Length: 249
Image (cartoon, rainbow, N blue to C red; front, side):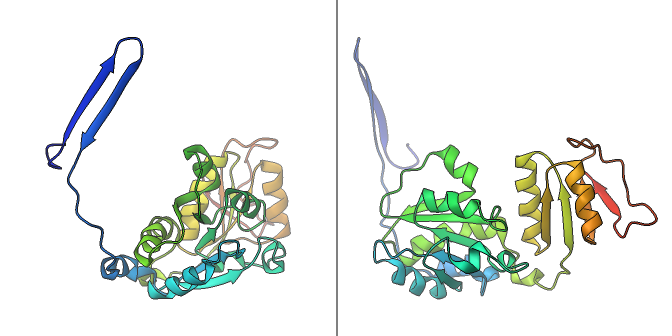
């Protein structure tokens, strides 16, 4: 508190409890977006899926702000939009971040195949969300709206840094990867890392599904947990299999 030119103290009353107080000196926030734009520069031109239900009337402001910080808004008015519910192959991989207006929308978007691992930014007039819910749903940041462009930029940075590949690495070759892992946390971590470099990831949760998947389709890479439910991963790509297991988790 001394470094912030402030003070801190406590007042206690026996049998009733304690009250803590503090003071500090802070400067006025700036609305200059130049610093934010510099931080977002590696992610220029990346796509942001914005589910705008037009319930607050601030959606147009968000759509206007995103290009100001170098991002491309892709707007739909519902998570039930046909392009999301019935996505084309690799459709979800073209988005780097999702902006939603409520926890309910975040939960519903997580139930759509292909959108389970995209990171979410929550924008709502009033935000009531627990840390556990935010972690479970992959919400990297949340804020109230209306907001300033600098606030939106600050909210987008954590999601883009954890999800998107900087433009300097956009020419990296993309692989079609089968991830066989039964642990949900490990699934999310692995998918986040792999999709950050624009690889397309299919996730299965047990050995039997993994075996079925490689019989149905040829993958560039198979990443597989050695100890899997239902069937232990003892196959490593037989002579008559088009797939080779080149990594074991």
